[in-house]
Image (cartoon, rainbow, N blue to C red; front, side):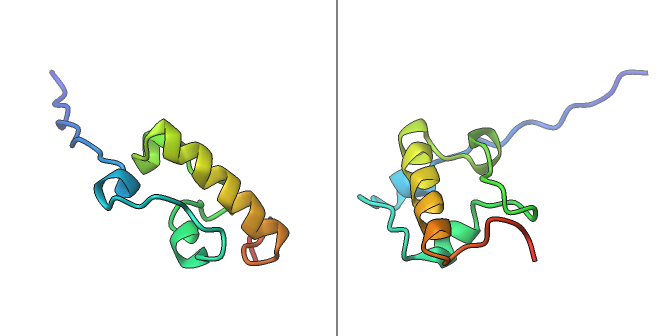
Length: 75
């Protein structure tokens, strides 16, 4: 019995499509989208963000955690 694979939809970087120049750590509503339920940073393969913006996103999430805008661990 052959299993069917669903075609993968092509992912586009939200920041490239929206022409967002910088990722601000103070905009924590956006950063929450890129953290898992365990408060971990979501990897590129799952979020669909390009490498350049993934680096900036990770740095912004770490800064937001340090400033107590995002939790280090889930509540």
